[in-house]
Amino acid sequence: MNPAEIIQVQAEADLIYSYEEVEAAIKKMSQEITAVLADKNPVILCLMIGGIIPTGKLLPLLNFPLQVEYVHVSRYRGGTCGGALHWIRKPTISLQDRHVLIVDDILDEGTTLMAIVGECKNNQAKTIHTAVLADKQLDKERSFKKADFTGVTVPDRYVFGYGMDYKEYLRNAPGIYAVKD
Image: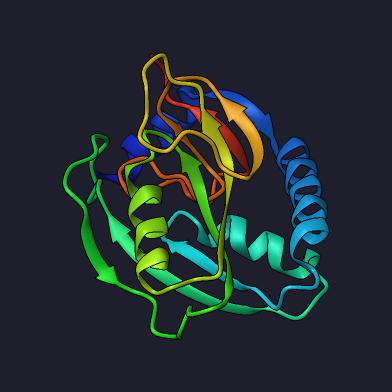
């Protein structure tokens, strides 16, 4: 895509949540996470690439001992339609007998999150919690029902910003936007 197309997509998009609203949702998530995991010495598992901004925003608000690790799985590979899972990086630290919090940008169909939870189970994590910045409200069944911690809900539209991308662009948008129908 050329930059002019990306600029046009952003200009025509509908603002779903402002910067301030997303920041408030992240702060609320951090309080909920702290209440559950503050005394557990958890591993915070960032799901790349989309989880980078939600994880980065959450970490300074989680004022307790924790470790940070990342995994990288792709389904979209630059497109707007998900395909087969492609593992780029699995966890490299031991998750055995650890409390794990997986952080991702969005819960859509749940295929990717389900695979990461499965990988944590295979690595014998003691407990597995999930946090997503956005929960997409789908009209169909999905494989992963609900995250333990959710920032906001979004309509069943293609959304971007705060880690969520549009064809690998606009992850840095200062809010959550929906592509024009």
